[in-house]
Image (cartoon, rainbow, N blue to C red):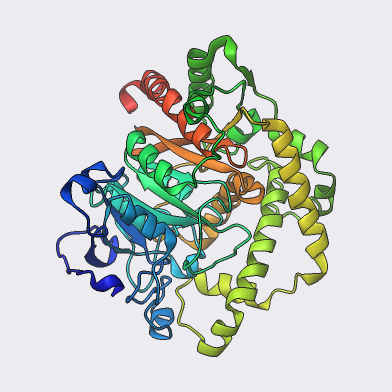
Length: 456
């Protein structure tokens, strides 16, 4: 075990969040030095996709754990949290091979959602989100490829940050699809999220005025009307809540733009047309925004291509016993032959990143639903999830394909289920994004309470 540090097994009710509990303390230092560290006194949970030296990284499935040796080194993201004074408390359950946003695991069980009993916790960083929501850890590390931090944050009623792609090291993290893999984190409150973000992000360039970056206000807040039509129901009034909050906090300092994002994509991503004709009936329906469905399709094909490159050899050799849903998704990826479309797929990705960067510039914020509705009920038939998944990925792929940063913000619970919204900023605008979330959060909660009344 790394540096001979003691790790002690712990017991107790963990809501099914943990694969194993242990104590991973910060590096030794004097009490005075410890107290000066930015994360001193905080505990954190670690998704079982991060290497911890001396322990096997399980990647959510027993056959992976069985066929891999203990890690030789600890992931830099884990080391950063430890060096900042936080204490690790264990490895958390995840969806097998990170290939689901549901949070159900056929082998290790499904972590119990403390915010919505009887409903899925969201995945693939399910245990990390539940550990935070259940107050078993102050924050938790997860990964987000297609939505695996943002979705469980929304389902469990906590904050979740997917940073800009590539700004946080993913070394010693089992890859799912490196083109989109992002290390992210969860917290119950914004001050903690801000502290963790300050530690995890690389230092700003020496010439940057950090205080000015945090104080910077958006000049434009884009709240696209069509993205809120993706919601299964408009009864939660998130569109109105966001518009009212932005007007209250930013007033005349920021233009609020309700233009449709789908129209913008159609007009500014020329290559997207090639993928508009191949949408499923669900993706092309009135419950979706077809240009965003096409963006989602592009991202998922690129994702499965990288997954295949990473894991086809292991899957074909080991023939792992994967759970339902995951098994079919992995086999589809392994059997896929997408090479002929790669140029067109990468063209869409490049055009979309450029178009979104032009839209948001350095001081724009995009506000959308995190997910298209309440967390699905446990053990829901896969066919019934197809529509929900299609709508979810049309929202999640905006940050996914662009590589932009996104924060999921809980508004509270309505009719017994959590409701959230998300803010996005341009690549590298992570501190700006979290600062805007801090500025808006109180107004969002107040507007939500006023809109929901007794149903909250």
